[in-house]
Amino acid sequence: MTLHRSQIFLYSLLAFPLSFVGLPIYINISDFYAKEFGLSLSLIGIILILVRFIDIAQDIFVGYISDKLAFHHFYRKKIISFSVICLAILFYGLFNPPQFSQQWLVILWFFIVLTLTYTFFNFAVINYEAIAAIIAKNEKQRVAINSAKEFSGLLGFLTATILPHLISSFYNINISDSYIFLGLFFAVIVICANFMGIARVRVDSYQTRLAKKINVKKVFSHKEFLFFLTILLINGMAVSLPSASIIFYVEDVLLLKNSFGKFLAVYFLSAILFIFWWKFLLQKYDRIKIWIISIIGSILTFFFAFLLDSTTANYFYLICFFSGIFLGPDLINPPAFIATITQKNKNEISSFFAMFNMTNKIALMIASSSALLILGFFEYKPGGDSGLGISVIPYVYAVLPCFLKIIVVILLLRFSKFSLNSAIYAKNRQHP
Image (cartoon, rainbow, N blue to C red; front, side, top):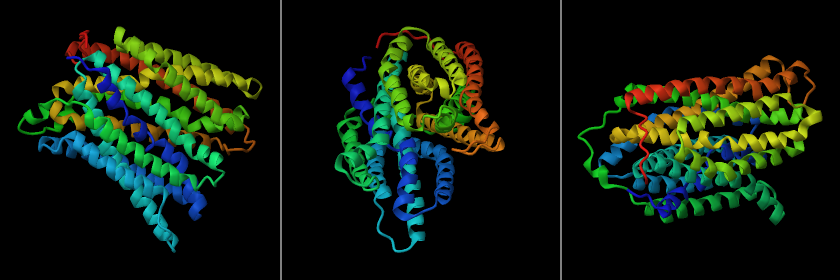
């Protein structure tokens, strides 16, 4: 069955606004509530940690509820549409709260609205990923649709990160006031992307022919899936460690604080430019082998990052460029592989993607916490001359991720054999 480019394009549209609800929130939200309402960064940090724990804990329940709703004919596109409307209202409310007279009401609003934002975000994302697994019928189609989705998501991530600053500069207004426009912009594009995009994607009617019951135990007893989640957890930590420590690396090792935004721009633009090149390779050759090649390229890139200091700091533009190049398979392959696994477990498809979603969040949490704990143990203080602490930063930023990536390569080689023997990773080179 052919998956037309128009369907892939319509599907990918929603990834652009959905990428606003992730790290861009964490980048912007602390600054907003600290400046507008005088909340301390420590208090904001505690709230964010608590919300993150709730966010992680609810994933498997969101997946199960989604499967149950689909089973009872409240199909995934309806779940997404309802979630998107709620998400638009909540996102706007998050950056445009009522003018409370007491600070505890601001804190309560912040906690409740942020928690609900991530709840409906999870419903939208998990069912969005599930639809990709449903409409893509073979490996080439899975790679194609996930490449388009990640391309759109990277563009959205860049937009959400820089938009408040662009609005502030263009209209000569306070950065905090620009968040009003950010909330309105998000509300408009997320609703348009839903009703003009994903709502028009043709989804098979298999949902009306589901088995008599949903067996969520399959998710926890599926050996190949659990093995793959282990790989994703370690790889996610390897990818997240540099993200958690890059600001310290740029400011106190390279001494280029004012170039931080430029480095990020080079990294994401490189990833955007090369993602469809990886799509071509992943469709033409063995996906695991191509993934391993990209990981080896990433390891070599971060090895050179370890060697940089303030005298060679401008070479970091090259590090950002090449690390962006090698990011593609890390984004495309995981949902594509899980989509392959779910072909024989369609009743529980949302539950599988919920576990995938939860694994990514746990990896990010472990990586960010570990980076801070290691640097804190060596008495590193941002912006200060802490001697030994600063010398540890390159190990956290570059060496530890390389070590984890080597483990991922070993596990991927084992997974390839394991999956082939069990017929889960079928090399079906069908034409879409």
